[in-house]
Length: 194
Image 1: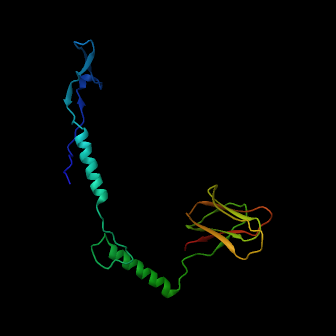
Image 2 (image 1 turned 60 degrees about the horizontal axis):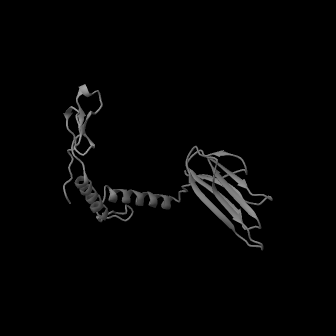
Image 3 (image 1 turned 60 degrees about the vertical axis):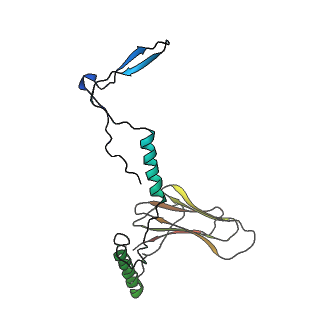
């Protein structure tokens, strides 16, 4: 890969120029005019043209085409594959083993939401929306006033089961579950992370 320049400089106008460039209009023999830079400079800037941009583009394309070796921190066993990949993988495996060994529930107690009532999330967690497979039932879930989950059942016969939608929400977000028309039996809940 070609070495790219890293020494480009800007024009620095002389103080007498008052921050403005000056140009002199010259009459050409064919009746046209040309403009000649008459600005006084403390420093002339670097030229930047097709050669420089082509070299930069070639370097970017070469980087895009390089194969970068990455490591999954959960499966990495060799040191040096990625920054702390083995340590991160070991720590995550240990944490997972502790959770499984002690049968720790990583979720807090589920909060059942009341249809049409705003609920401010006291912690990070999951907003869960349920819509039963009943004729014309629907459930809508709003996060900070925006419709984010919408479940609908349009079946004409009788079916058993439910549709479920779930999304991660952050502490302080406002969530709201709204039951569909005709008194459908949908529900909404918040499950905090403990």
